[in-house]
Amino acid sequence: MRKPLIDSKITMNRRKSLVKYAEKDSAFILFSGSECTRNNDANFPFRVHSDFYYLTGYEESESVVLIRPGKSPESVAFVRKKDPLHETWEGFLFGPEGAKEHFGFDEAYTNDVLFEKLCEFLVDIESVYYRIGLNEKRDAEVFKILNKVLFSRGRKGSPLSRVLDPEEVLGQMRRRKDKTEIELMRKSAQIAASAHIEAMRSIKPGMNEREIQGIFYQKSLSQNARDVSYDSICAGGDNATTLHYNSNDQELKDGDLFLIDAGAEYNYYASDITRTYPINGKFSEAQKEVYQAVLTVQKNMISKVKPGVSFEELNEKANEELTQAMVDIGLLKGNVSDLIKEKKFKKYYPHSLGHYLGLDVHDTGPYILNKESRPFDEGVVLTIEPGIYVPLSDDEAPKKFLGIGIRIEDDVLVTSEGCEVLSSDAPKEVNDIESIMN
Ligand SMILES: [Mn+2]
Image (cartoon, rainbow, N blue to C red; front, side, top):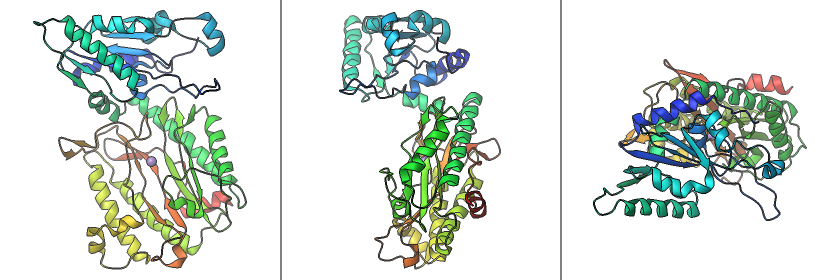
């Protein structure tokens, strides 16, 4: 038998607490996702949908859960049937009995009766939380069911009033991490940080970007990460000025910087860390100038993270400080407040400061609520990742800065008083980096 990764008491409590957030007489229909098969019969690795995992801990593909907050039965699972022949090929399945026993669902069935059972369980439901657009075929089936439910109520029955995005509720819940999640986030960041250190130690001029990608991957999985949390960005020299560079196939040159944006996924929880360092182990003066500018802003922004502060405030502050730094090092010319107003900094810093982090790398949760910027709460995890990128092709920057792309990214947990940097094991001070590399 496969052991569930989360104690079912925790997922049962999460399902129970939906009633605090959800509309009256509502139901959630959540799918785990389906296996993707290539033409040649080889499987793409399946990964359960994060909302589904958060509320169930169940990892099997083609599973569905219906949750009716406050009603009985409250949770009904539809899962793959136990099938010895299939299990010989593909491995263990819990089946409905196992699903009930080990995951605490009130009822469980095989997934082939999903649609007739849904009709039954949706009769007294007014609003359905269902995510449209993940799978068109599934959308069509779900809407067919909803239509059938509607008709079954006859003329006197109340209409099914709404289909709502489950993110409205799950975004709120998942945005603040509970104790169990914080432990997993911490572990995920520690794994990734140690993989970053390994990459830092291994890099040498003449290696290929891909070799460092491999070292990061190996070091993550050897510490029990189930995968990397996204396609790693391993960019030497000018490649680092392409924000989502992922060809990772060029030779690393003596004298260039290396930018690596890579994270681990541990028990489905993501880390997301970026470090930039010299391929030959020693920063040049020009590289150090830009690096220190980014690092100072990054540390300043981290020091401001606490409950009540919002991304909007931090973004504004980061834009100001980065513009000032760009002027100080001679990358931009002119009056600082004009440059900020005209957003001239965007040329060298085109993205924003960070994002929520959790079961997904760009985690769910509202950044804006009721048209107001949402302040951080205790338990929120986010990234802080300013950067400066000067492409070789730039015709305005001083020559010494051309081909320098720097981003420094940490994972930060909001605590009651301030914050904790979960990824602090990964060195980022110039001296620390140089001493590890030499
Ligand atoms: Mn990030």
